[in-house]
Amino acid sequence: MNQSSSVAELARNLRSELNRYSIGERLPSSRALVDRFRVSPVTVSRALAQLAAEGLVVTRPGAGAFRAAPAEAEALAGQRGDTSWQEVSLSAESAADQVPRTVDATGLLTTLSPPGTGVIGLHGGYLPAALQPERALSAALARAGRRPDAWRLPPLGGVAELRSWFAREIAGPGGTRTADEVIVTAGGQSAITTALRALAPPGAPVLVESPTYPGLLAVARASGLRPVPVPADADGVRADLLADAFRATGARVFVCQPLFQNPTGAVLAQERRAAVLSAARAAGAFIVEDDYARRLAHEDAGEPPPTLAAEDPDGVVVHLCSLTKVTSPNLRVGAIAARGPVLERLRAIQIVDSFFVPRPLQEAALELVGAPAWPRHLRAVATELRARRGALLSALAAELPELVPSHVPRGGFQLWLRLPPGADESVVTANALRAGVAVAPGRPYFAAEPPAPHLRLSFASAAGPAELAEGVHRLRAAVPAPAG
Image (cartoon, rainbow, N blue to C red):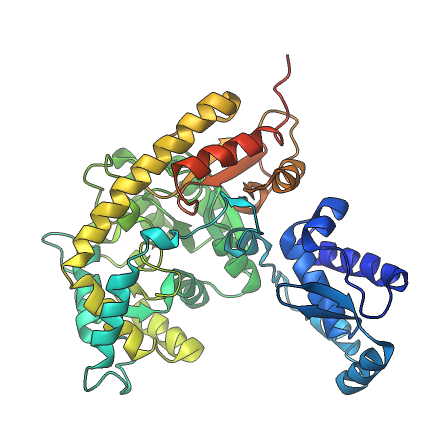
């Protein structure tokens, strides 16, 4: 059952039971509703919000939801009018639409929603507050705000000095990228949206790694595109299958994460890099390189390989990167780098969609990466991520040895675990939540039917090693014992 239907069903159930409660009486707690209906906290929150919008309940932060007085409900209903016509309008697709748009943020909500009270979060996609450079960010923002031009209209492509910094980072030592080939974006997700809108018309196929980042699949489907999976393994995408997929589908875009891929943590092997670039060149296609984790390398990762963009003089690669993951979810500053005529289309789409990234935020990012605290922060994150990865692996080996991953990443913040045969990952995640630990199911990471049930466990968002160990201990009760 998808998220929207779960919300609608829960709202119907709660609506039908409202007469059990007196006016002003408190409804069961969110945790009680999660346990009773076997749904996620996000589903409960959205169902209660729907009833509140209908005037049937009143929600009070920290206190819960209460049955509203009929007069209040009737007055609110009268103010709202009749919006039932929207169901027809929103579901109607043009007869010319070959691939209807699907707007579904379920996969993203799984990792973006904070865990409930008392729940250990092994599902998140950002660093915890203790690892974020909050003091350095505050200092950078303060310095940026004092600049005379801080509140003036920025260059539409981004502040020149920040574009130059991104160009150097993308090109690497001896690289030839210039500031003119870089566009500043509002984080990585915005960059993905801009790239897909610029490179693929509605209805077109887009090749993606399998498994891949749910946010990419959500953007593609919301844009009316058709994600086509290309199998990947511990060495990254299979270059031979990629070439076959280009020929079979006629696709002109392939989106990949060559470094510490999400969710597997794989790094594209050196012997595959040239083959991937050649397959795209032969197909006359673009490679969208999502380099989200370059600054999330662990202490034992060694020197990471260069970007694909650094090895591509011909404009095949459109490179995306961001500062958000290694700093704060609120520092939504990223970049797109491209070469050739496509750059103008990317710049035009960026302007149409969002005009520009606010200049104070760009200036703060520039102050941050130029401060002495920046390299210290990167070293601290690298050390801590390695320690957390080790703590999670040790806990799994002790409590759930059947889930120890076959591939241990040396970058990023997650482990990709295959569940025992026959396990239902939706049941496992629901049982885990009832046991007090939030994990991400594997299904949203696949563009088509998954080959097996999986879980993604994040070791970045927990408070520390002790909480990671306790989270795995709670997960033990939710995972079915292996057969035999």
